[in-house]
Image (cartoon, rainbow, N blue to C red; front, side):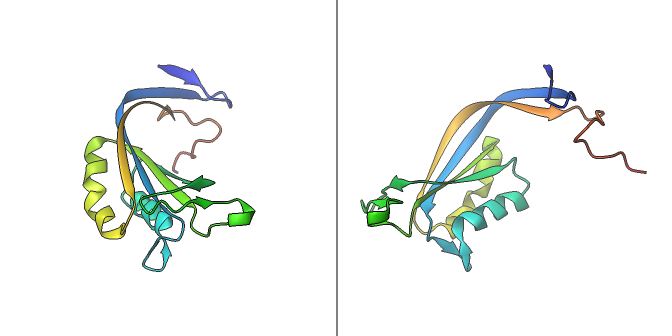
Length: 134
């Protein structure tokens, strides 16, 4: 399917099944001196995954049942964090050994999802596309 982006450039739609991985952890979790969520995103980016997004929760609890919230009267310094990544099932499964080494406590959920991804045509050189090499 072909559509148009806001700038007028032609966009090609890809559809298919992928896996949505959600990694639930705490804001204070660390890996080699940096926030664990940051280390996970850098790992996924370094392996050229399709993308990753980090969300900070305003309230939640995990296995300890200790309530964590951003409310001022009981402010937590360990708010819930969720890292999401969508990619093929094979690529998601392939990253588990590295994640297993990094995550000391938390939860990973997996869901099959249908995706519709829009990308510029490879030969489209309109606004936003990189210039042709000289």
